[in-house]
Image 1 (tube, one colour):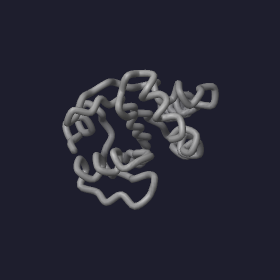
Image 2 (cartoon, helix red, strand yellow):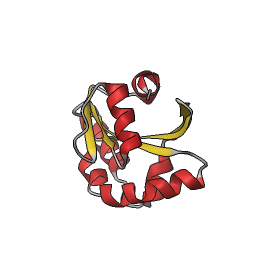
Image 3 (spheres, one colour):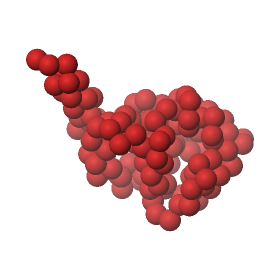
Image 4 (tube, one colour):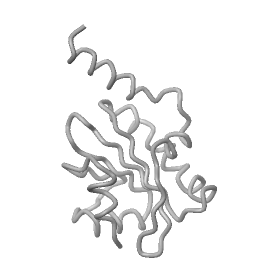
Length: 132
């Protein structure tokens, strides 16, 4: 098997989230941070198939408040990173996340998601940028 084929199969396997509940996805690869006095659970899901996760957007956003409360956070931020397009899609369930996105990434949020070109890394790009 060629290396590119193996890599493609590995990415496909990592992108298969069908066995995970919405709560598990919101907590899967997440870290807790405090920004401007707000306790945030910042979750990043790296995938080659963002549509699979984004198709669950409504149920994920409906559960964010519950997960935040259960985890003692003010808000869950979910970034779906498309590793092929090198961009992240942030789910925007409320005005707090909208304000955070606009202040942090210099974007204008007009819907319940916002695409952030070039954003791939929580440690290097997301966390250092977060502000209100």
